[in-house]
Amino acid sequence: MHRQPETMPAIAEPHWEVYAHGADVGIRGFGAGLAEAFEAVGLALTSVVCELSRVQASHAVEVHCAAREPEALLFEWVNAIVYEMAIRRMLFRRYRVAIVDCELTASLWGEALDPQRHEPAVEVKGATYTDLRVQQDDSGRWSAQCIVDV
Image: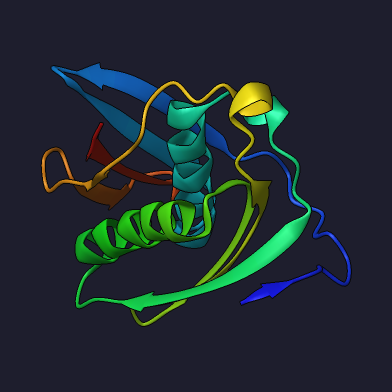
């Protein structure tokens, strides 16, 4: 469902990165909490497609997914974003995620794909189980990663 955000959430930019993996691409997010790491994965995913700074966060989309463990939830989450990108022909710039007992509810803010302005580099086909990992380090910081098929 499309809706205009009532107020744009004040979200600090989570840390994310993209890494090479053969013919595919790895995406990784970090955060103080699991939800923040998943938000960062969303940003990493969008950055695979285009330069994040070119995407406006003007329309919101709601996403829900669930799984039995965090790794499977990450897989479902990435594929939910890919699905929304494909079906709505949108790119997303902001993510707000809540996770309770491996059930994820999220708001994704973005805009319609404009090939001339966004200059998409690739089309992400979906998440893979390759290098799928969700973990918390000794300091309590979370990381989440997987390889996406491009």
